[in-house]
Image 1: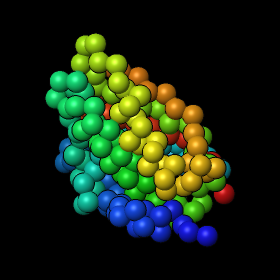
Image 2: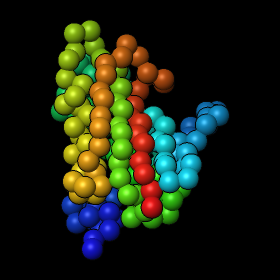
Image 3: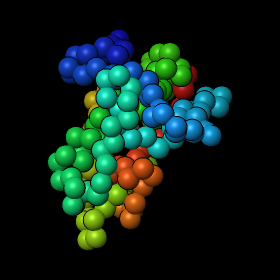
Image 4: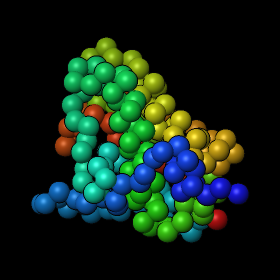
Length: 160
């Protein structure tokens, strides 16, 4: 059976390095919090290949189009997987994606948050398949996010 890492490679995607926080940024919490057979993923932005946080920044509907935000949500999925892998070592330990919650920094009147989050959800189902990758999800629009992030995504998973 193909591993999640092999599926990523097969679809031409690489995980970035685990997150590297900007100088002066202190997080009094974990990006990935494993408790028994649960992994709770704190809200993530996108990281570049070296693990540096790259946003995206601004409001969707003003500074980013839906298509740009959807691509960024897919990138956030890769960032989540990189940080999760750093914590649990092997993505094959994931028994099921339970819940995904996405916040989209939205311009007034913007109503396509659900389409933005499809970038994340589609990646997870592609990598883990419909049984393990299937999850419940909420996508909401907000007036602002920390550090002016355009999108922040959190999740809950079951581990073997």
